Image (cartoon, rainbow, N blue to C red; front, side):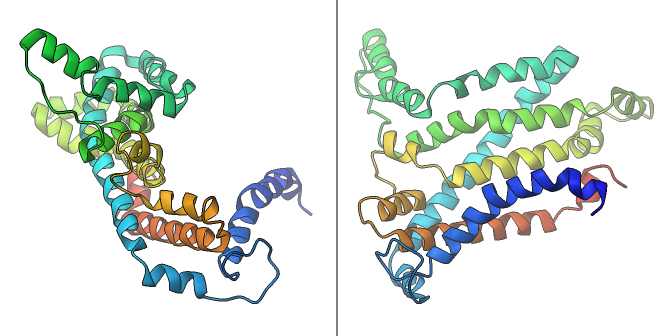
Length: 278
């Protein structure tokens, strides 16, 4: 056994026990008969047949659609913010960016209920508008825009931090060289800054998408369950329905769909070029 392998053995064991083993267990459990609570029993495709014959595809589409919209909105919101932080604060930009992670120390549900007080009828926003202008506006609460607002708010730090890191890795000498060669400000951004910061953008988009697909609190708290994401179906299967194999099958399908989409996106990019390896 080589010294390198011995040194990596604790990490390998940790990854096998904490990552691979749960995935294997969930996958195996998805083939168990419905409403069983052990691994004993003959493997069956009953759970997957039930999913195909149900309307679970609607929940899949809602989860994927909301995640995609969240990623697009955050890409347009976070990039200018990250760009401004890096150009204004320079080497201190990472420290300033870390300030955006402070809300993560507060429970997500508490923060979302703060938005409920803000958006509810006669709440902070609409109450203020009514007091100042005498206009009674309709509440945004329990609507699709409210869900998207909550997801954009919750996942902003996960997009902002990788983007700030990617932009900060663009050498100032490269910008100056492009300007010296006669490039306009737009050409410098398009040909130099954007391509060189693409690793941070790509990592932020993928990280945000994977997290947003698994979002459930936003739809519950801000959406009033007007929209049912796939994670809600998984929760119901594991709790109220007491059908763990069905919940495991839904979770496996979600992992497969998300994994396939991520690999499809990665195949469209040359990672060696993005990461500066060639």
